[in-house]
Amino acid sequence: MRFQHAALPLLLALSVSAAAADLPVFVTAHYDNPAQLQRLASRFQHLIVDRESKTVKVEAMPEDLTALRNAGFDYRVDQDATDQLQRLQTSLQGSLRGAKSIPGFSCFRTVEETYTTMDQLAQSKPNLARIVNIGPTWQKTRNPATGYDMRALRISNTATDVALPNKPTLVLFGSIHAREYAPAELVTRFAEGLVNGYGTDAEATWLLDNFAFQLILQANPDGRKKAEAGASWRKNVNNSNGGSCSASSYGTDLNRNFPFHWNSAAGGSSGNRCAETYRGPTPTSDPETQNLMRLVAGTRGSNGVYSGGIFPDRRSDDLTGAAPTDYQGVFIDIHSAADLVLWPWGDTSSLAPNNAALQTLGRRMAYFNNYKPQRSAALYATDGTTLDTFYGLLGVPAYAFELGGSFFENCNSFTGTTLPKNLKTLRYVARSLWAPYTLPSGPDTTAVNVSSATVPAGTPVTITANINDSLFQQNNGTEPVQNIASARAYLDAPPWASGAVPIALSASDGSFNSSNENVSGSISTTGLSPGVHIVYVQGTDASGKPGTPNAVRFTVGGGAAR
Image (cartoon, rainbow, N blue to C red; front, side, top):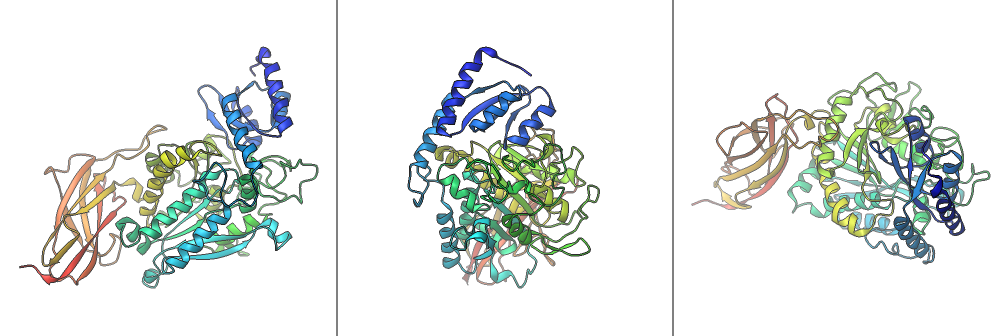
């Protein structure tokens, strides 16, 4: 390991200062080999890793600095970032605990404000949004007057539920780690965009007509309240296993408490009750984890098969059985802060059976948010996590996002960069829900337009669209890029619907000879009923793979063309 003895007095002084205030500092620590990186990862989550320089950036409490020194790690404190963080947290800790919003973070809603938003969406658009209480938090199981009921927000057009009883579903978890402010807000704004856009935003409308969204906006509300008051809090607030833990280090890391391969990887979690990655005494030991498992997977029968949850159990809980390629729906657990899109496995360097398809969708998503796409274990080992559990037990394509910035990301960064690019990412995922293991291999329909939003009956409308096969993040391996071979439109039915009739579209430049093509075609309105109609457009590449569609709406008026 590297040492810089001349820097130690400064480091010690900073450590003492931080300890006196009981506030965290930002440090950059050096490591020499993967084993040392794993040792850091077992104590600190999440690390921002630079493999070229063999450094990690991490937020550390005074006891963490002591542990780094005792282990012989060379590290330095980023004083500017530390000063900013400590000013922020001192301000938060001096604010009223019952304040309506988070002081200094007007862009992020508190737990109460988030729940109010959910109520407002359900009350204003009951045909699109409803709330389900999925169970109490740990604190509420101890005292019904405190803690929270955990809530899921289901979004879909209930008017199409009868015709589409098993809608492919996107499940999002926000802020399962309490101090990560941005994930909960991203999920909340994603929900608002879908619900409030229905009927005017063509994309939001066709998504809610065809798919369902089950959103856990606050996956760790007890812990989140501590973070809102200024604590650098990661875990839940379960102090029953705390023992001699300090007032800032008890609790269970919920994202190490899930059952698939719990405690399976060296350094993937900790059995130390005071550690940031404490996995709990047994798999699924904590109420929050139980609530989330019951929602997503259901309950496990004596035959080992889960049933009654959002996603069906379509693979065995081992490392060899692949999920079928027609699996529908996607799971994403959203975290901060390392600019990553991650997929299974997290506890082994072995490839997941569906790795090729997981990788392709991961690279598609990473194009939109400009993050690095990689297998979770390529960073460092983790076990008992959400993405390994829901892929490993059920077969659903499962991912974790590490949003950019920091745990306490400032509002300028969040609203200017993190939010818009990740909303685009989630919209892409939503458009792929019918077949997430196959559609991302084909070209993406990035935009669809209509020549006129309203036409008299009998007047044809011109449809234009862009089809692009090259939209992958290629900074960690590459995906093959194909020329576009064809494009088709479908009137009032998505491409996969029974009886959907394709209408051929032409390349606007006269020939399909590029990976990025503008296409156009004419849709007859003769015989169409008055009212709103929707046109779906899907491209196919030179290898014969159809891609992710998109759609546009137009209205046929009552009068005939003259």
